[in-house]
Amino acid sequence: MQNVTRPSDTPDLLNHDRPPVPDMVVPRAILPFHLEGRPVRGRLVRLGGLADALIPRHELSEDASRLLGEALALTAGLAAALKFRGSFSLQAKGDGPVPMLLADCTDAGEIRGYARAEGMPQGEAGALLGKGYLAFTCDQGPEMDRYQGIVAIEGGTLAEMTDAYFRTSEQLQAFVRLACRRTPEGWRATALILERVAAEGGIDGLNTEAADDAWHTATTLAATVTEAEMLDDALAPEQLLHRLFHLEGLLVDRPRALSYGCRCSRARLAGVLQGFPDSDLDEMAEHGHITMTCEFCNLGFRFDRAEVKGGAGRA
Image (tube, rainbow, N blue to C red; front, side):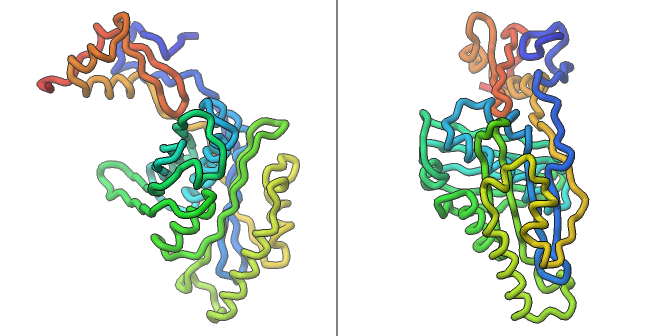
């Protein structure tokens, strides 16, 4: 089979091959649910083998790897609550030893992510990211307005940072629990997300006090879930939710799939190169070739410098 990361006889702009990455789908990765008659909806996200396919592609410390896995599960869970066509992303930029964290998920459930780390840092998310900002972006293409919410990084964990975002940017009550570990089966990552449905959501006959009590009960029960339960492949998602909410009118909705979602190709990267002037391309070249590495799948694509034409009229 052709190695699509190396030069090809096909012109780069016509070569749409993807790199040799896993063709992996987890059919029941996201399980949406709600509590009947209560102002609570949620999603349980389990990446399963996707976590082990995505996280080890980057040379990261255990703690930075866990942060990446949490970001992937969280992004998938938040994207599943939206009706959109395009991609939803989480991005964190800070001055810590992990200055960049990015995860995105398309409306079709294609997920990818990466973290850039300096050395092999240890610690929780707050210590890894440092001071900076957290941004959630819904991008539906050039013909649609892009929605973006940005807040300062606040909190020690990624879950705490997300809670701060909901409180300050969305003015929405939410509960977020994240877990990611290397297990005997490989890396696993999970997110449990609850959101309080606004009054206009149609909760009949429920006054403010009763709604407050129902939300408090749901989040109290959700807080009892353990990391071991969240990451246990042998514990079905429906069974886990039943343990938590079976007395609260639990109704499980249709599950959603997630897949390995790096969208790079030789054609895409060739298009990026053609935006550079020839002088910059000459500087990039080594021994007559230019190598571009996809930050998501961490594969290097090699281009023959003689085949790459720089942007016309650019200095």
